[in-house]
Image (cartoon, rainbow, N blue to C red; front, side, top):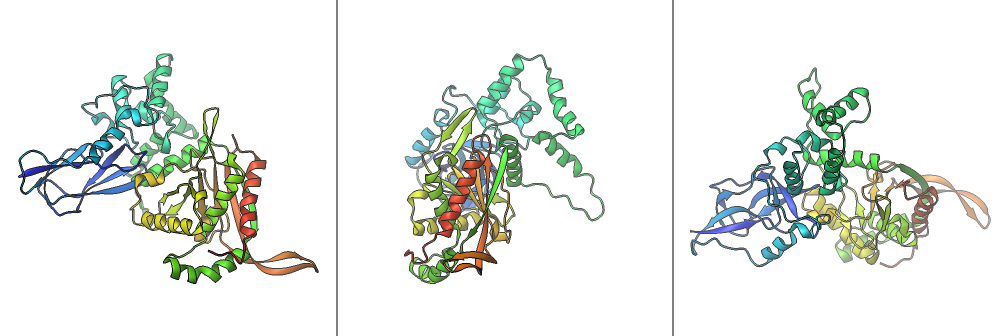
Length: 449
């Protein structure tokens, strides 16, 4: 019987590793073509790894919660026929291995390739994610798990990267503060009522599970909810949030959509919602005010060339995910509609690719889909602004006509822009959200699509 090496597949240009979260097939199970072998996770996205062959699973090379690199052999499948030598996947695998090398990962250019540490058992009790490189450095420098958990990360979703750890180690060596005091500090902060670190919150959650009383029910956060919680806390502690509001008269837009939606669906086999229209207006406004499309690195402002708009989508589980429409300014309304519908539908069934949630430069969230008229959204780091659009409501409004002011029933909507006051002042934030509203208010009722 020949053996087939199942490799961790390439999951996107910016994704080099994944965590094994569940083995769907166990050793000895018979596998059909395209059967799901295991489930993996990268940041917010959970994915399934299907089998490209039929056979029997004879070996699992990674345990649940282990981290594998793209191109690693993760399982051995015994297939009928052929020689005894292990079967190889096609040449694409070699490309994936090349892309998974540390020197291709941003931030790792100055470090030599490290041999993986033989045991990561010291890190398995933490709910926080650590890359193999961070674990390796921590093991070499005798950094304990408690210390790791106390270090604030600057990466995506508050992830601790090698620069954060190296900076901590350098400060530790030059400091007279003992390790025991560092370990006690988060606990003292929690007792004093000041914001504590995430590990302290996790410890509180774990101990609170023993204090069930009456009809109360304690629900443990799932992995995605923990990541969202960490990311939101990190965002509020990183950026001074300011929110500006504008009310827009979108009557022409609403009437236009009502006029074209049936013919559009018949022609394109796609439903046109308000979301692609909002995305188009945001993309136009970003081109008018490009300093909204930036990120912050220390004292540096990074002005983004591409306009990649993330759209917040609620999942059936109640969690939130933000797929990204890349180069949104280069798509027409038909293209935006198809992109929005595709990403939203795949998000709901957990079929997004990991790379499809990366690289956003601005985020749009539609709080109106829940009947809310406005909101104060939290910035999706490392971006500097996020726009919330509220529910469209019929309201009496004053119209200026050539014969004088009149009161009419109009379709009105609030837009609220939260922005990072470190780099976006009230004038820029206010002008940007006003420009988005202008594009929506001045919608051409006779526009062809």
